[in-house]
Length: 262
Image (cartoon, rainbow, N blue to C red; front, side, top):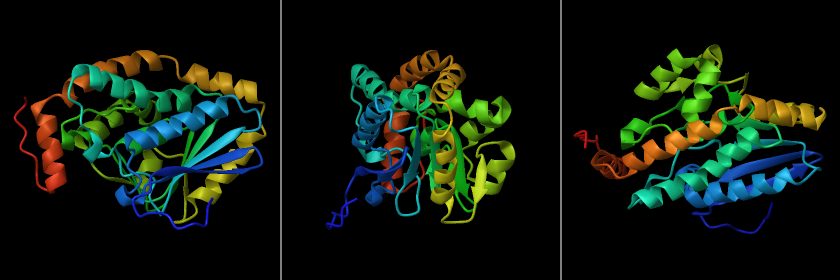
């Protein structure tokens, strides 16, 4: 990490390695660590590099300044054609594939907000450690989109299909105690302690035999490719819908959307 002054609109992934554990911090404070496309691609590059690094045996993924991620960066959603929509999703799906099928176990350390695309990324991690006051939400419908980044695949595996349906359709806020009760998070810690607790779990995982860990992850991700391809097809249609355009405009203007079904 650098001590040099950084611009207020910085967008980066901060890497810090301690032994065999690599901590990755999403750092985009201007938008509460929203997963803008450049940030997702940087994360994919790092995860891809880790695949070939035998010295890294576990990863911790977190967000800066007390927020995991406020979701997708709505201001950067400028899909203008079916081809560009499919290409956008092909690129962002790299992160989900690497998290779910990569050889290295990943622990999410969640403080503050974990919503939308941020929730998708957290659910693609092997373990979610959450501060007791964190908030989870899947509010995709508010901007005329369906859940993506693998969330329709990963969330039912955590909470069951019935609860996943309610979370994805209603977009209600879920506080950590309820998230733990339904299986959305795996461990609850006091505010400000998610990262130390996640590091402890990551150090345990780093000491395990790596090949069984990698094969277990691969087995549990069976069916992911088909799910992501279906998601890619459906979400591309929604990117081009009038309701998504209205949802974007309403979000940026901070007003309720007026959806028409088009």
